Image 1: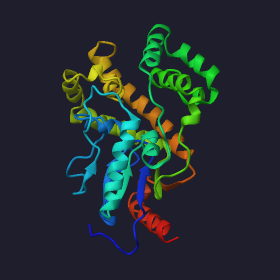
Image 2: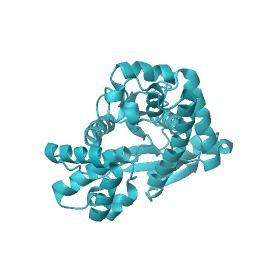
Image 3: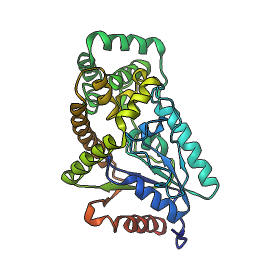
Image 4: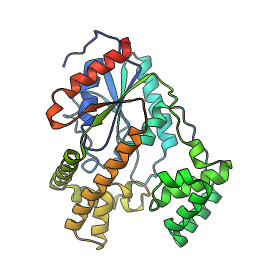
Length: 314
């Protein structure tokens, strides 16, 4: 595609929304049209070797557009939003300095906000973290969630009672800072001039897309991918081992379920995750939502480009 130059590009474009909505292809199109490059904001695509299960674009699918912050961490490394923030802003700043348009693409809400919004991450205390993780192992996430609800009801509302890792982090921040965990959550204050585009797909259609995507992942060799990553330490990775599809297949390898059951649970879990993603981005009034439904598939790229140009000239 030729690059359009009828209007100056905004400083940063962010393409957000739930999984399977069509963000990746739209990001490539916008980068092609605006002389930009893609910066990944999907937390699981940061991991090397996690290709099929994260729907990572192939080199051909990237359309010649450079993609940054893919395949940078081993599966044994825990996710770290603060580290990602530094890396993402370095890429964004570099592209801006070169006159290129950074196109941030991903559905990991906190990673997107960490890249483009005012957000400082409290430090960590190894002793506090170790104590809380020990309590998590002994008492379980439900008991710690009750503790979190007493200390910060709003944090308990947005963090699932089953998410032990996030509960531990919230309690750690509360103890370290003496403030509610939610006081450290991102505001809607931007670091960059940004146009955020949300890709909206109705739930029935999105559910169908998710089921089809999981089927295709299985056919493409996701089980073999997980088996190879298990040999590289995937099971020991606190973050990567919990990725959708990977977690379920690891459970099947451990004899906790059949592979067919793992497949069905991957579909169910991905549908739940997509709803949480949608809820997260809906809370941000700055997101401009465009339909990614099948009947608007041809229109979406051009509507998004028109929106970007309108935002620049307004």
